[in-house]
Amino acid sequence: MSILRLDETSEQNILNMLLENKIINAEQIKQIQSVSKEIGKTKLETALDRELTNEIEIRNTLAESYSLPTVDLKKYKLNEKLKKIIPFNYIEENSLVPFEFANNTLKIAIPDASKLSLMKNIKTITLMDPELYAASISDINNFINQMKSDDPKIATQEYKISQKKKIHKSTEEVEDDSGVIAFGNKIISDAITMGASDIHIEPFKTSSRIRYRIDGILKIIDEHTKYLNENFSRVVARIKMLSNLDIAEKRKPQDGSHTFKHNDTEVDLRISILPTKHNERVVLRVLNKEAGEKKLTELGFEKSDLAKLTKAITSPQGMVIVTGPTGSGKTTTLYSILKTISNPSINILTAEDPVEFEMEGIGQVAIREDINYTFDVALRSFLRQDPEVILIGEMRDKKTIDTALKASLTGHLVFSTLHTNNALGSIIRLLDMETPNYLISSALSLVVAQRLVRRLCPECKVTDDKITLKILNSIGIDSSQSSRARIYKSKGCNDCNQSGHKGRMGIYEILEIDKDMKLAILQGKSQSELEVIAKKNNFRTMQNMAHELLLSGELSFKEYERQIQSAELSLSEYEEQEKI
Image (cartoon, rainbow, N blue to C red; front, side, top):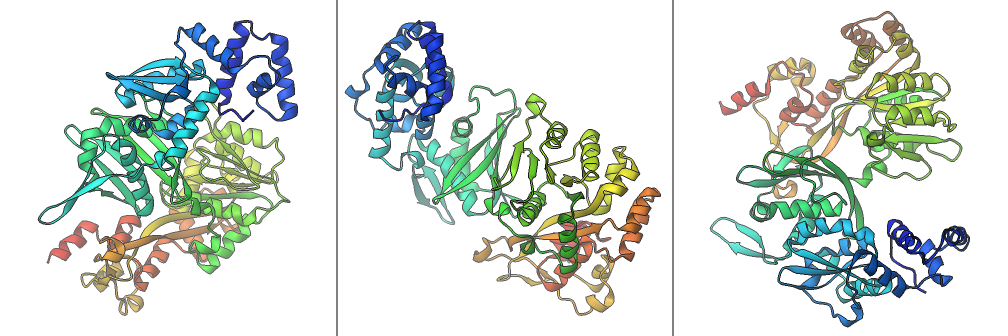
């Protein structure tokens, strides 16, 4: 017989039902479990193969147990409108089919009782009353396959729009009643095409909006506003369905994930739902798979800094910390490090929240705060798994920090992250969390601090005449450099979608914990004293790197101010000068 399309929960539900109704017994269940492993089939397939039951018996038992009418799906033909009532991927994933509707009632065939819990969600998304019927598994599978073969685009319906030309611009409107499915697909596809890292769907008292974060800056996407205002709750419900969240739950925050197909590739999404005063706010993080594929040499490290980093990550033990605010590219750097050092001769384990990119040959573990599986718990279990290299996604508490530092002193190479403004700030942060200075001095090998800044579009950047020598001197660029400097600013063109910027680049500082720095940490030196010692040993700050990018014409002064925030002249003062 053909392979049945049912998940493990459904199969177990059916077996339990058969056991409760004395169609099979406990001894037969044990036989099924044993034989299924030997022959490589599921437990339900094994029960059917051994003729312990049959599909009609399963259907009728389901009907009797839950007072459901039965239906023979072979008697029903596909209806075009039925295809649009419930998203096809939801039908396929849950093995249930809508087969008829009338007078606001939707008839749905189910193969087992585990589907009963989905009815509340279906009522929310369809705005119809579901009426359940028991059907055979094969009938449901065949019906779903027929839906797919009749319309291969059913799961990714095109966003049907009509353009109405006005005096200065055109607007797009959805013309299809089932457009919420296509609308959801379109906003995600557009975000991916435009290189957005996040999608924000936001409700307000009388309106709503969608914003994309592109190159680190949020931008309102006006073309989606009209449809979103009219269908906000349905759009949120659609996104919840994509990520298998509870559609009926609107009081508590929810987090989920979804793999979205875009131009024959798969893109991972991390989805966060937050209840607000007026409705639920949604943020979708678009995970760029390229981040797990970049080499260290592609990240923009200066040659001497890259040599320091390479030395630290190829050492047999020690700790390397990558620090910076959210969205500064820490994950990309860490994955590039792992990619550089990974080989079959070493055991690498990671604890992440969540696992953003799967890497071949590396043991990756997802943190589960809901079951108290924290970074600290994961790290302690790692130490019993014989690793050479450990990555801890983030050191959030004293327990995790102490365990990680001690692991780095006992023959392990440990990587982790902190949220601090600069490399030296990481040392102070560790001390503030009551970490003994001798432990920091002994274990810490190197700190990478970083930011991501927007790169000026090379096609439309123009000279910024408002940046005077005085301004450049005030941010630490000396006269010998500033006298020959030509600073640029953004303008906007079709090539950069009128933003004036195209892509982002990293700005880094790498602090090597050498003998002088270790001694200074032991002596309890202040951050300013540590900085003096570091600079004597050729420590190059993020400001130094940003100065070079300013002078090379890749970085604007405004972007420098926005990300580096070290100038004596404030951004508001600069803007006042622009008005003169």
